[in-house]
Image 1 (tube, helix red, strand yellow):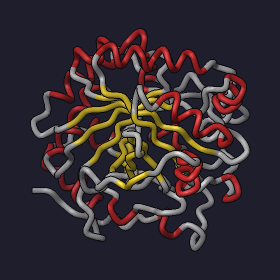
Image 2 (tube, rainbow, N blue to C red):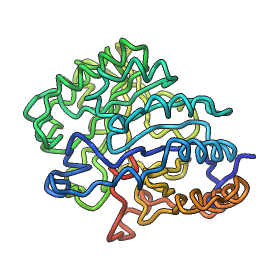
Image 3 (cartoon, rainbow, N blue to C red):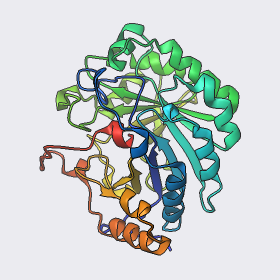
Image 4 (spheres, rainbow, N blue to C red):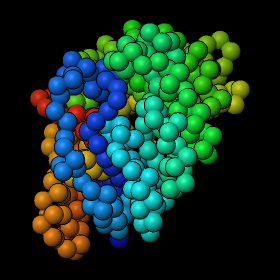
Length: 332
C-alpha cells in the first residue's frame, strides 16, 4: 500500500543517479575550480549495479512510487544505459520513465533509449548566446551541441522539456528571446538559482524570482494564464501565453513547494536522500550486498519515508546547514 511521511506526503517519485561524473562543469552544480582535472570520481565498483538499481526501484514502486527519473552527474556517461532503461520499464506499476541530461550525447543515444522504453528527456540549456552559455557550463561548450541533442531526441520520438537556471547578471537579460526561440521545440521551464551543494556561490541577490521572469516574458504584447497542476506534487507552475505556448516556473526559493514534495533520491552509490538539500543519506548498498531479503529491505525503506520531515526550502533563512549533498551526486 502507498505510504506517507511524517507530514502526510506520499511517496510518488524516485530520482535515480547512475553516475557522479559529468562532461560539463556548470557553475551552479559542478564548478570547475572544485571539480577539476584531478578530482577523484567514484570507481565503477562503488556504483550500484543495474540489477541493484532495478531491485530497489521495484521495492519502492511497491510502496507507492509511480515515476522514475534517471539522473547523474550526466547519466549518458554510464555505459549501457539502455539496458537499465529496459529493465526499469518492465517493473509493474511504473507509470513513467524519464531522464535529465545536458543533451550532449543524445545524438548518439536517443534512438536506443527510445527503443528501450524511455519516454521523456529533460534537457538543461541556460542560454543561446555562446559566450554566456560557455561561461555557465564552465568548459566553453557551444549551445549548438545541446540543440543538436534536443533535435535528436525529438527525431527519436522522445518527449522533451528544457530546464534553464536563471542567475541575475549572468543569463537573465535575454530570457524573452530565449523562450521565443525555443518554445516551438519544447516546454521551457525557468528555475530559480538554488543553494544546492556547498560550492556554487549562492546568494539571494543572484535569484531572479519566477514572477519577475514571467513579467519579462510577457513584455508589452503577451499575457500569461496559470494552468492547473496535472498531478499532485508537480514542481513547476505552468502558464499558457495568450498566443498559445506553455512555459514553466520552478520557484524553490520564492515559493517553496515542500508541502507537496513526493520525491526520494537514490545516489549512484546506493544512498537514499529524502531532500535535495539533505546533509546525509541512508545507505542501502551494504544491506543489498549483505544479502538482505526483500522483506527486510522493504522495512528499511518504509521506515525511512515514514520518518521523513524535510522541508528545507520552507525553512531557508531560519536554519543553517554547513554541509549539503552536492547536486551532481543525486541529480536535481
